[in-house]
Length: 242
Image (tube, rainbow, N blue to C red; front, side):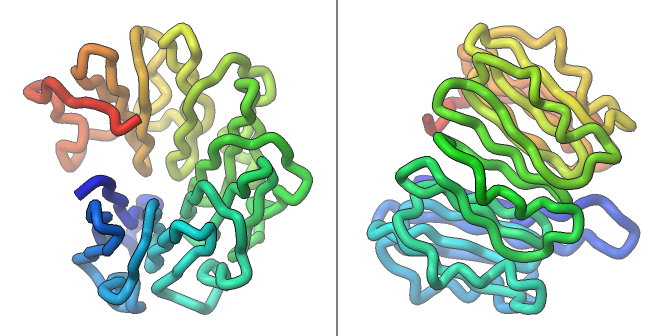
């Protein structure tokens, strides 16, 4: 395996089922877990270079810049067959986002809170997608966000010199060039309590928790630990794929 993706969903009383996706070095894809909408039907995929997973959905970036999709069709988040020259992908709960080689972006799916309103974005390097918001990181380290404004997860306009971003269900996290971490949005479980983190090179955001990878390979965590998702004390020598 050279990459993995998890089909997570925002925490709610009627959710919880999920699936896992693995990308092999030969460009084939393996998926396991809940397959209620065919989101694990990836056995025929070939020449895939990147995978992303959302609620009831799996996306695969092919080497020629096109995108494959498996899973639920109802909200339109799998309507990616016309995408071209894609170099990056992200999945929210109900929407899918892509970055083209020229830095423009495209999104499909549920746009109830404006989370797909990214047509005017330019010079994007990376995108991330939460439950009802979308985040974009430009080549010069600025961050943009659209979507649900109620939680504060889109309050990223003041961020500068950012190297990486991640989107949780209701919060957004960024890593700065200095190795510090910034976070905005819901902090009900302490998932935004990252101001003291140092020498961070990568971050990941779950529904209600945040992980940070340090340059020395150790990991820090903040947020909801109800299911022991923050129990990373014994982890060491983790290395970022970047």
